[in-house]
Amino acid sequence: MQKRARLIYNPTSGHEVMKRSVADILDILEQAGYEASTYQTTPEPASAQKEATRAAKDNFDLVVAAGGDGTINEVVNGIAGLAKRPKMAIIPAGTTNDYARALKIPRDNPVDAAKVILKNQTLKMDIGQANDNYFMNIAGGGLLTELTYEVPSDFKSIFGYLAYIVKGAEMLPQIKPIQMHLEYDEGTYDGQASLFLLGLTNSVGGFEQVAPDAQLDDGNFSLIVVKTANMAELVHLMALVLKGGKHVDDPRIIYTKTSKLVARPADENDKMMINLDGEYGGDAPMTFINLQQHIEMYVNKEAIPDHAITTETPEELAAEDQFVKEVEEISKEDIDGDGKIG
Image (cartoon, rainbow, N blue to C red):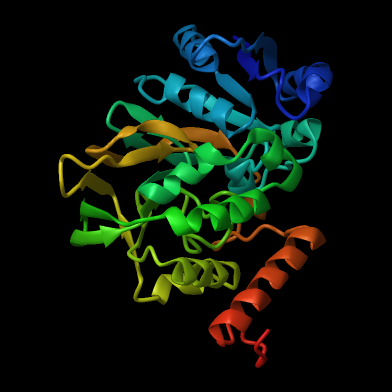
């Protein structure tokens, strides 16, 4: 029996570049040995999720999610809760494309991304479960997670992840810590924090060093707890992230591995918003569980090193260097290790 693939694509992603690429992608799927068909998402809530569930229950062998991280998250949610799950492939056509960045999938050309399937390289990927929802890349809680809701989509499209830095600088004076109760494998944290992050990959909002030693299939999250809410300290920590992930050893950070996390505000009257893959995922209390090697994904395996670091554009590198220099001048600390301040 011939294998079947279902391409689920968001027609509005990437300035409608997906619409122009569908025929070529279907041809690549045919070359890979699949009988291929398509589904174009609609404005209906959970359109991609519902179609992914339908395709899985109809015994499709492969579901291809084409769009931004939101579309990919929907497809993951459509199949992660099923006992029998098809393979999955992703074709990025969004803004930051964190998941594609981590899997070394080309992010600037949907046809090139589809060609990764022809390599026939797969990896059984860890998936996160948050109460009744699923996420494939990042979960977070605290006031800083509101940042992703505040950044306009067109702003993100123009400036990529640097938009988060710009908007974050505007929000920093408003940030106040939350008294959190966090239970994880190595212990419990009761105290103030502006943010916790739970990562499955090393790529968060375009930053590749937030969880520098993240493994894709080891059954563990990378847990990061940011204990400070001081504006100057947050900016300093951001600079440490950009320069080799030096934040993981900072005393203002808890950085550990865990297979599970229970998170809630210490005061039940406080509200703690939860972010799942860049979208609002409800409020704590919430229990997060790592589902080890849960979905088999097509990846560019030969390009994924033990400590994945994507080559950034000259514009991104220049912006990072300028940011670090400005922080050095304020803090009078040599962050990048070049022996100079600024």
